[in-house]
Image (cartoon, one colour):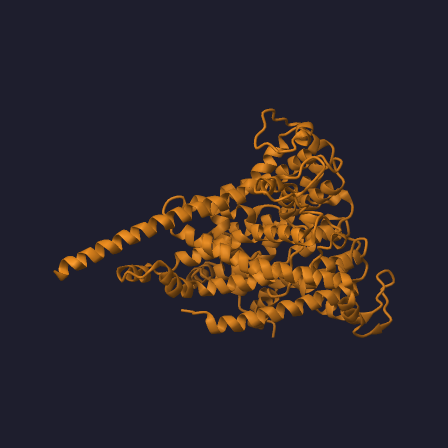
Length: 298
Length: 294
C-alpha cells in the first residue's frame, strides 16, 4: 500500500503533523477532558470525579461574571465603532488622489507596534498622578470638564480608555481590508452613476455598500472573534492584576486560573475556555446567518 | 427656449456638485488629518518623554509639547538599571529560531500538499484547514501543562516549540506553490532532479515574494508575543520584550520614572518600526491577503 510516492508525501508532511498533533489536536481533546475532571490537582495530577462541577463553579464565580460583563461591553462598543470609523476613513482615503499612500502607511502603523509598549504610552496620557493630571485631562479641563482618573478611577472611565485603545489597535487591519475592497470596485459603475447625476449618498448606499459587503461582514465576524479574545491590551493599560482593577476579560480569567497568584486550576481554566469557545461560535454562526441574507456575493 | 433652460439646469447641477465636492474634500482632509494625529501622537509623546529629564518631567504640571534640554540619560538608564539588553537578546533569539523552524516546517508541508501525491492527502488537508478555526485559548492550557511536565519552563525550547505551529502559513504557501505550472515539475523529473532539489532550486526562488511576506509577518508576531511567554517564563533571564516592559512598568526604575520607561518603550519599538518602514508595501499586502488581527 505504501509505495515510494506515498511515503515521500508523508515524510515531507511529518514535521507539520508532529507539531500540529502535539500542540493543537491533542490539546483540543485534552481540554475537554480537563473541563470534566472535578477537583483536579496539578501537583499530583489526580482528580476525584467526572462531572459538570467545573462549569458550575466558573459560572458562579463573581470574577468570571465580572469578566463576562466587561468582555461583552467591550465587544458591543468596539465592534460597531471600529467598523464604522474604518469605513468612514476608507471612504475618505479612497476618494484621495494625492497622499493616499502616505495616509495609508501612517494608519497602518499601530498594527506593527507592540501592544504592551504602546499601551504604556496610553496609560501615561490618561493617568492622573500626583505630579500631573495627564494630557487628556488637561484637554478636558480646557473644555471645562474636571479631571477624571481614567486608569484607577470610575468603571466607565476605565472602560472608555480600554475601548479607545482597542479601537486604535484594531483599526489598521480594518482600514486596510476596506480600502482594498473599495479599490477593487469596478469604476464603470461609478461613471455610469455620475453621468446619471446620482447623489453621493445614493451612490454609496446603492453601489459601494453592496459591492464591499463581503469584506464588511468579514470584518464584523473577525471583529467579534478578536474582541471576545481581548487580553493583552487590557494588561497594557491596567497591569497584570486585572481582577483587582475590576477590568478582567474572559481570556484574562482563563490565564489567571492557569497561572499566577490565583493559578493552578487547569480544570477551571478549561471550562472557562470552552464557555468562551461556545459564545464565540454562537455569535459567529449568527453573523454568518445574517450575512447570508444580506451580503451580495458576485 | 427649452434648450437654454436645460443648459441652466446643467449649470446649476454642476455648481451644486462642485460645492458638494469642495465640502467633501475638506471633510476628507480634516478627518484623515485628525486620525493621523491620533495615530502618530502616542509615538511622538513616547519619543518626547524619553528625552525629558526625570526632574523636568515631574516638574511639568502642564506637560510641554517640546523639550529644550533633551537628555539621553533615560536611555543609559534603560540599558543599565533594568536587563533590557537581555530581554532584547532573548526576543531576537526566540524570533529568529521560531521563524526559521516555522518556515522549514511550513515549506515542507506546503510542498507535500501542493506537489506530491499520496493517499489521504485531501483528508489531511481538510483537517488542517479546520484547525485554522481553533482559537489559541483552547489549546494553550494543555500546552502549558505539556511544557511544564516536560520540564521546559524557563527555557528557549519551551518558548519556541508551541510557537512553530502555524496552519495558516502552510495554507498560504500551498496556494502559492500550486500556481507554479506542472510542466516545470515534469521537466525537472525528466532531467532526474530530486524532489528536494526541485523544491530548493525552483519552487522557493519562484515563490520568494510570498515567503518573504510570511517571514515578516511571523517576525512581527514573534516580536510582539506576550501571552505564551508570560505563562511559560517567570525567570527574568528568559523574559521577552513584552514581559520585560510589563515588569519594568510594575517594578523597574521605581514606579514613577516615566521618562526611563518611555526610553525602554522606544528601544523595543524601533526594530519593528524600521522593519515596517522598509517593507510596508509587502506587510500591508500580506496582511490584506489573509492576516487577521482585531
